[in-house]
Image (cartoon, rainbow, N blue to C red; front, side, top):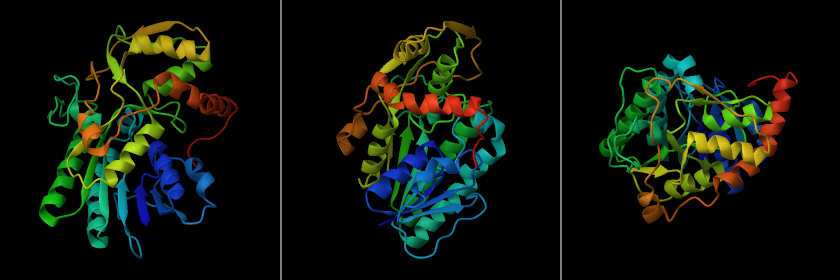
Length: 320
């Protein structure tokens, strides 16, 4: 089996590269390193069957030989990154998705799109099932990501219906684990890095907004099952256990044994008030549900976060 992963040097992409190498696939990791890091896949460089290709999929995407699977994960995924690179974010969801679908069609490969819970926007339905159409501000500061993913989903379904392409769509809810960027603006690396640096945790609003957190190994297992499922409609993959942000702040301090306190800041524009997946579809179709609790996942990630804080504070460099 040969599997191509766009955005393969990113947080999630690198874990998928690792999983497919472990499963005996030849893996082509494609990334332009705009937000990914070559360090994320450096441990795979000497593995037989692994290839890294420096390429911007928004410009073109090609491959010699056969291809069985194409997983499209190329896209800035954190608020800091997609607000810093708004045009690039929309280009990779439009042209990049088109180029990836075209290559999958040419090769007869199964195509899997990495979508997101952000397609639900600031939801009026809770928890969010795949049948919910969402509540998205189409011109807000987060719209480059939210609407980009919604567009990519629409394009994926158009290729499926028009060309009969085997497609999958995974709607990914908050996921965390080793290889996350500390400064990407998401709450897990933000809180953990603040605790490890002895800084107060920055909680937006009163902390009553909710999130759910899925450990990366659970997510990867769900994605692999979806790829092999034959199911073309979107599927939520995430952990349905819900935490308030204030409660999560307390848990992080308890897990790391460091009490730093909380600083409250104004809520960002269009910040979702609730976010929790309805995973009925994943349970019924994939036989999947998460196994790793938030506390356990934080402990599994602790050494990575400690090392990353030390590396950055010691003057270590960024993505190359």
